[in-house]
Length: 612
Image (cartoon, rainbow, N blue to C red; front, top):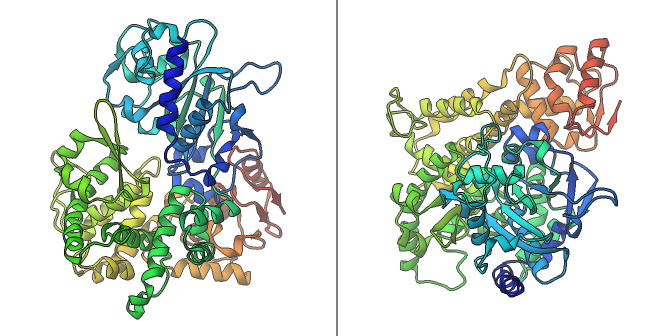
């Protein structure tokens, strides 16, 4: 057994050491200790969660990585089931790598005798497994899996990326299994392990994006932690690491990010920060050789991603210079690929599918040899596994942008509903009817899964983005007539009678992507001058909810004195939760408002710290 552990240690050290940049890892050595998932985490898109909480940590309690699997006090026992959540791109897999690597070197958690890391990407490639075969997958050097768990030796089983698992976990109907040799469906195996019917001596650590973590009943989770985003100093370090050879560039990029509040909030996610910074840097390097009209630094998401795609596909990032002809060939090939990848991205998004395997690629007519030769790893990553190869987009938002490109292009000639991939649907003709259909679908999506797709789709209609991609990823365009009707379709989402929903806030962000900012500007102006009273129609309430997240007027304090009625207050309640400092004085409130506010202040999501 000792020889086996030794071999296992060596293989872990060799496999996990690469790809860990030491500079950016300090943040991962301390996790936030949380009580459970908030409503926002269970119901909303990752990006929206970060925008709403302004990228700030939800709690001040933290736990160092080396104590993650230890009891919190002398009288408690170590956690059996630990769950670590974090939004897409925050560093969950990096955290696992860091832990495994530090453990294999003997730096942390020496009380754990065996660490067995597995990813859900890999589990997807199996239909059925027994608990014993699962252990063999994680530790191929073992001859007798039973001995792995023998005695009181502590074993830690790591299951990374629950959100990438192909089957939802169903704890209420899972068949009980206590036989470690019995082959059962993989999802059933996982539920039995978490319930403690199998491998009950082992500790289990699951990582996941927040919404997917909600599949595990909270009563089964002994410890929940969350990965926090980059703080201001960490963001600066992160950018300096990115542009090691060019300090000027890194400080210019940081300046642009800090000047744009929405962008700065999202850049607390390292995966997103990398995309934005590369895109802005690409723009700055090329801003001299562009016509006058394109000299504004990209500000909207769609502008940032358009430059990013342009950079990734034009081979500009390649270290070695290539002949112009070769570059042109590569660009043309990658344009073709973007078409078929876009379809894969769109239908993947609808099915909540973010990891694809060779059979998926073939089904969408994606030529794998082409894919390997010319597509940038800035867009698509691949991971080789014993049984097959997994492909996944370098960030969730890359999949969403490709999906929007596909929909935008397909909507011009499609005659049936694009949301129905196979099967029969009513005829749908014309770009605008497809656009309205997407707006409706996004409104009805339970968990905002189409919110960012919708922002990109709206952004592709904005003149600057259209100019940028025209004749390149989009046809030379005839869209000018659609702009105002698209604005109307989005404004239709703002008139909520009862409460401002997250969908309405997202519609405001779509209007921002379309570069239609009249409503928001009028409300912001009224906030500045203290003349909001009487202005707060349902539409303006949605605009106000959006401004609470993005406007500098609300940065230090949100001042809503003298302007709220009971109904308006009720409409905005779910959004006021996230204002750190809130002024509600001189509103002629009656007692019933106090009840409303009381219910808000005791809510799990509430971030209000000062209230007047």
